[in-house]
Length: 569
Ligand code: PLP
Image 1 (cartoon, helix red, strand yellow):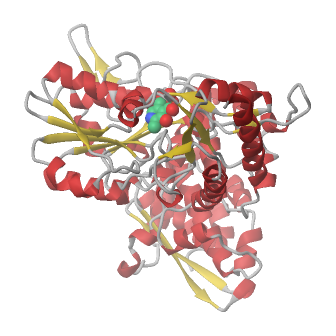
Image 2 (cartoon, protein in one colour):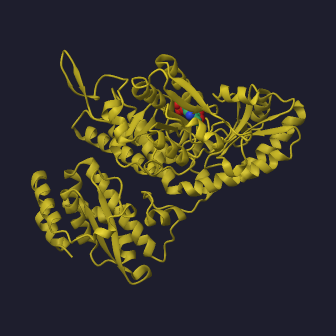
Image 3 (cartoon, protein in one colour):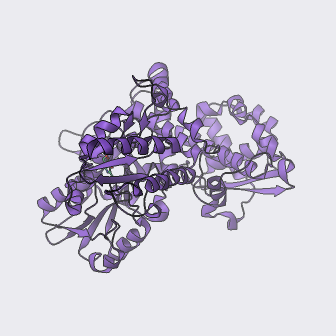
């Protein structure tokens, strides 16, 4: 297949960047035909700017299966890169592929120096897909359910997934392994407010600060090039993680609140007119309620609510009457930060398409806990925060379908978001730069990339399964407590959040007593005052889990709760 690698080495390594591109184009011209039937979504490799499909022809079984890489792209340079990969892996068995140092090949070709950060990401995506295919065939490796799904067609996780071992995961969180003043270890049950960070995220931020920090998209010196590469790689990772069609659909912001305000004032405000309707719900966090209320006040549009069932779910029987032609925008959380309810985003998206409404999904609580697939779900916007997904504060993401980002106006003006400025007027850059004015939270964006990569390794399906078990355990314990009312639906309809009240116990007093046991929970209205009013309460106690919580945490919480209740009631 193709040229022998040795020949490529000889011809390629000494070429300058321009001649390397020409050479890649020539290699690409000679790429063997990729069967059109294999150009499926299942075989798409994300992480590349161009379209890439990759599959394999396998002969034999287990570790000795010989894997022949088949791939194609709509970019001729990428076809050239594919030709190099085919030559490098030519005739290898699954286990040989897995132990092969492909980076050494790239180093010897001097390839990394000469291709753009986007192409480098694409190349990495292809290598990881090849390794995944090899692991699928090697008997000594077992694929997680999520990896099998990705080989079968879902979005590719970029790293191999280890088994979900909560104690091993917990050990990666320095703050959870430091004793409190009384020698106890913290029982952290407030990940819904903000999650803790694993050592790899803390280390990544330190690495940037200590080794190559510079502004992003500014300098062409070595630090600047490295920073741009890391920054854009975080964008690629995020796009891949969310199942976006392109990294250009990922806009970095300061967090969910900033992202939702961008959409409210950049997309909705210039568009909505008196008589139009914004459809939302009473369970929204203020961040996904107040901006729409403001847009409604300023445009004369009407804010309309999807009714809830008595157990705190969206009332599907009311959908026909609320999804009407007047609705221009639907803003809904994928998972309630108080009730824990998981909302049917796919069905809502379907309804939105029928009435041509724009769908904005608040993913602040769902994205850290449930698999997302924005392209398959057909949402227009999805927003989340870095600090709830084991990443840094001060950074968040707006996924915007490309056509919606093109339509949206910027709301921040300044450097980087322009392509031309004269004394009379300015022309905006294309998205995502159009919405990234000024110096970005560079270290945080890169830290977020590290967090996403880490979470992908765990596999969100496994994360959800683990957290669901904790939620059920908690439910069982809470149900035994007299006078305790849980808000929201049964565990099968919710994520890793449970809010409750106990008759005669003030949530603030309870939180203080739990704290004295080293158990950290949240109390109050959780930025959902309309929801608390709807439930007829002023506040509640909230337990929210993260990947690091254990069954022991649940038991410690229940024990502390029972003691506190006896003291307070
Ligand atoms: N939306 C939901 C559902 C939330 O839970 C939160 C934070 O708790 C937000 C939005 C706001 O996120 P941030 O404070 O990171 O902007």
